Image (tube, rainbow, N blue to C red; front, side):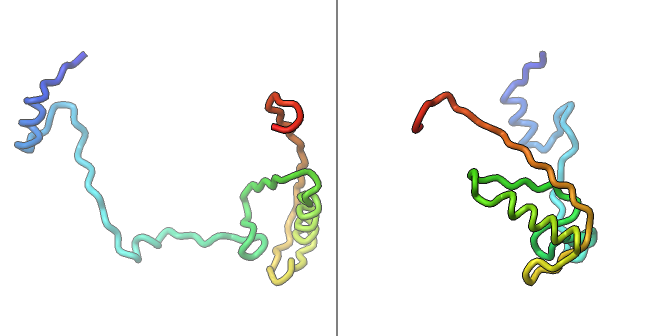
Length: 111
């Protein structure tokens, strides 16, 4: 185990000397706007402005809140490529998975 002398470390810091084993200094680099956006790839929307391709979405809510109806409606629009309101929809394959997770917190009645 290495024990460091605080006075020696302070003297090294003030003198600018590099301590043994210190990593190379990290310098902040500012980019101009052209370099900053050079690698930007715009989102690929399945439903314009709402759902992106190659993402996994989950919808949660209360029982009877209409989650299944909303998901099946979206799935039908994607499967047929039909616009959803004013949003353009790209036609694509749909995989719909339904799962129910019952959570209990060890209380009976109102918590």
